[in-house]
Length: 309
Image (cartoon, rainbow, N blue to C red; front, side, top):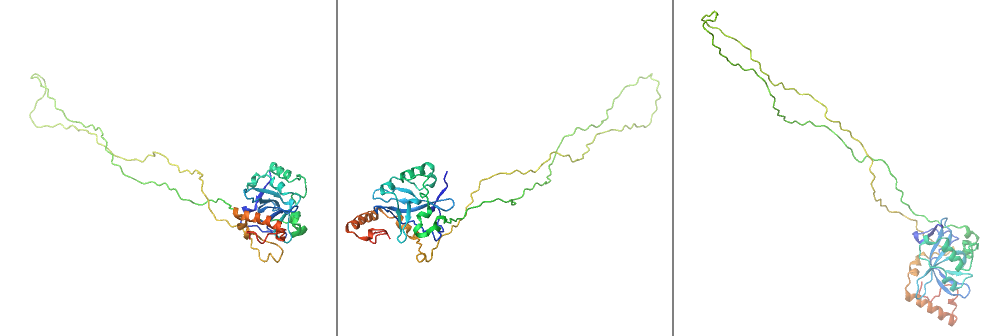
């Protein structure tokens, strides 16, 4: 499965001197000088080489996009124009629709692209970046790479103390009341008559009998006994937490690119990519007029009378 990235996914990209940012460039056919559309975005490989041009066809009644293999076109040396070589305007329109989702560019989709372009998948020039930048970057453009930098969120984990659990004992007093059965001895007096003929000595005087009386009394004592054992254990609980952070990307600031022969059209891309239906209609009618009156401005490059800046 191919691994491609759209340049629009990044706020900026670092273009080496050999590679011009062609987003916003007009796309025309070399044979017939037909205006096809505008380069809307770039599709590159994982190592930073260009693979496709995302071309907005920009017709009066359509907003179709197609991807054009980078080797099927070439950047103009002086004008901000991308020339398609070996393909007609109809062949470009026959390319399969591109939705902007690079994840849909699989092997089957690429087979459709190469078939519609009249090439084969084994054509070495079809995806030749050096061929695309030949007039501007020379031979060094073949191995040049885009540098795509962005911050990525890296979330790690560490152990921190989140709190403390404490078990402690306190003493509370409870008033207890119980009923205890106690036994005590009491005296009972029994009288028995004695017959007159009983042979007992009888005297008159004072006497007494002492009988100890016993009784149970409650004896209260307290003792400590173990009732239960309490254990404090820990368990790991996993919870989902959303992490939010601001990420930065590198933005290219090109100073003096005109003097170095490299054009940066990223500043105008928003205006060209968002033109309305009326502007495209004016451009289309203007091209027809230029071809009729022989105005050389309708040749390679942008027309000075076009509504696009």
